[in-house]
Image (tube, rainbow, N blue to C red; front, top):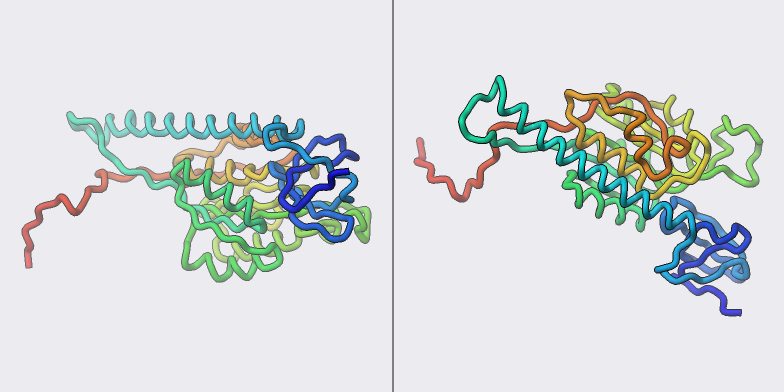
Length: 301
């Protein structure tokens, strides 16, 4: 039998090959595997793994890729609609000039802490495509509260994303899903949210998106998150937190983010993520910023 090697893409026979993983580590006859599309970290016997080609992902991965593409297209459409609304608003009433209004955009600034380097890289690529200002850092889940305490005063973000890996423990001390000790990292996400809320208590001044696969949704919201995972304790897509942060960043401060709209357009849907009404953090400025190197200025002093 051709066993999987480090870096191979694999599926698990015992789970019907539904999710595609990458082999991250091999110890004796077991492998540590990480979902390519979903924020899932697991271990499996090598004999349970079947290597797959990158062009033939598992069924769930295929559906997730399609949904991710649709979500990105939706964000791009939303961005274009925002541009058109800006032009229409600036052409009327308070900005009456013959030329087309010239303005600059200030999307909400994101601070993204991720407990997974590979997912962080994917997330930063998406922020860049959408031209959203972001500070992204790989931070292990247990150190996120301290990291936020240090970073928030200097970065001063509009949106904080706290994500990485989580999950309901197999050998948990209690079967009670309301107990934080039943989860791998939810308690650290809760502490990180509380740290962020100590910095800024206003839910519209600082939007917090928190959680990962199977996180304690209720505890994250009670701690002060605007959006969190996972209401039905399901796996969430690696880019779901990014989609929500992007929506917050590109929604005008005059508007409320439509909760059902943003959640239905995530890859995982309302089983994977939930939240509360929140104002956007996108602003428009006038006049359009100029290239100072082209200005001919006569010194006044």
